[in-house]
Length: 165
Image (cartoon, rainbow, N blue to C red; front, side):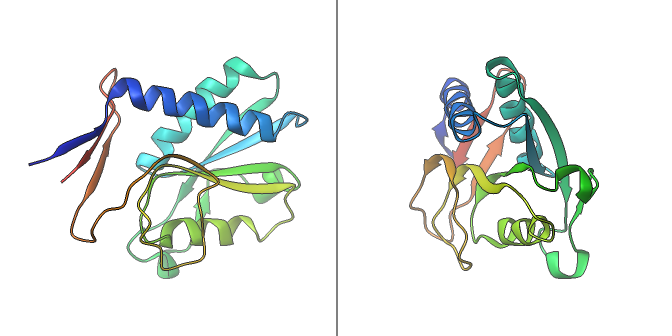
């Protein structure tokens, strides 16, 4: 049995709120890099990018972040942008769910290999089961869940949802 935690409308509201928070933190920036972790993070990043493009004159660039989430040490982290394209810029690393923090910490580590103006993180769901010292600067919802429970984020046209099962 799955419980719906967030409806499509609630997710749209959270996307807008996070986009406005990112805009407020970067109001002086000419460019903002939205780096979405492949999978749900990338889909979430595209939605944030879409809202940002409507509310700011800044150039909003989407950077795809690729890694094996089960084994980021072995796979390493690759991005669709060259490091020189995001150096000395404001970067927001985006994922759908912050669970243990493994994916975000390896993503953060990758981006810190070059000098940045700032690096922030955004997640739709923060589960509070971190084993690494990484936090979400922007979050849609925080859930206190058991380790046995599973959060499923679905991004579908006009039917986005977050379920807990």
